[in-house]
Image 1 (cartoon, rainbow, N blue to C red):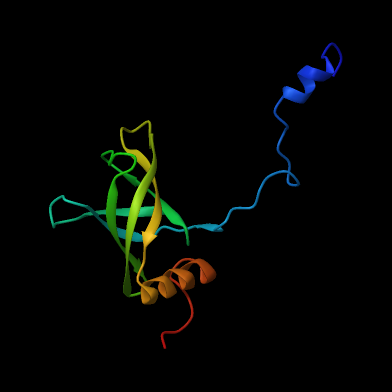
Image 2 (cartoon, rainbow, N blue to C red; image 1 turned 90 degrees about the vertical axis):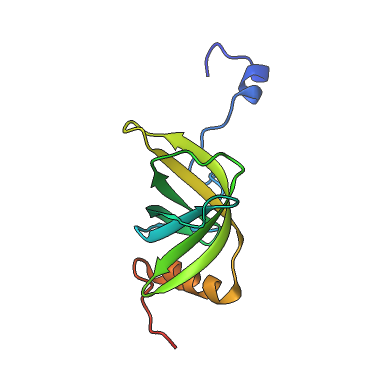
Length: 133
């Protein structure tokens, strides 16, 4: 770049390209999957929502209320006709124009059988595909 010293160029953030963008640890897929959301220490009764994105490391959903970054939640995730249970931690909340929040959560605990359901969902996409054994 003209007019930029070498020191300034070295301090500039590099543009991300396909070659410099790191791969995600857990691939994600777009997935509109029904979930039941319960806050740890909250009422036993849960609230329904729908995921936007799903991966084996976590998911993203839209909810009318903020849950609090760092909060622990329990999710029941509908995969085909089965429910996968997961203890999750809220890692981000983004306000949306309509007043709701886009909430990203990271899976903290998933029972092994439920993890298999989520693996099937991510591998085969919406509805989980495959047959039940």
